[in-house]
Amino acid sequence: MLDKTLRMNYLFDFYHSLLTEKQRNYMSYYYLDDLSLGEIADEYDVSRQAVYDNIRRTEAMLEEYEQKLRLLEKFETRRSLLAELRKAIASDQAVEACNSLIDRIEKLD
Image 1 (cartoon, rainbow, N blue to C red):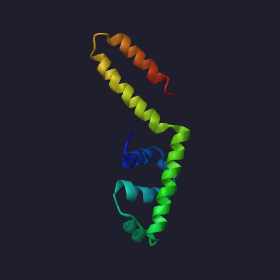
Image 2 (cartoon, helix red, strand yellow):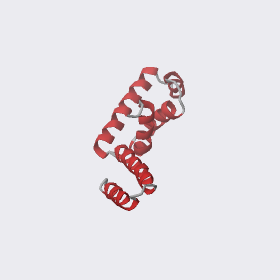
Image 3 (cartoon, helix red, strand yellow):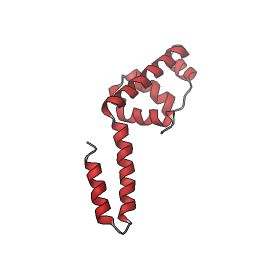
Image 4 (cartoon, rainbow, N blue to C red):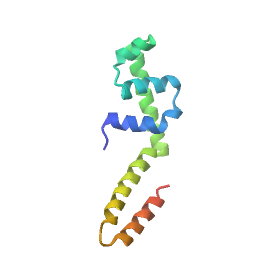
């Protein structure tokens, strides 16, 4: 399982276009630029609590998008299967193993 920051970064990468500009900015400052709540609050002339609440609501929205669309889950599965495929190519039974992995990748979508 990914740690929270890495997971949020992935979710933000996948779903940022579904967020408002303010949500994108807060999340970008907090997770990508590693700004504190206070620094973000100063930038937007709002309270730290307002920034905190917005970030928590946005995190919940990103998790909800992931539950419905499963883009991160599919990405992780695809990455894992590709690693297996690379390993299978180097094995003695490469053709059968590769065909099996290709079938599993095709069934993802």
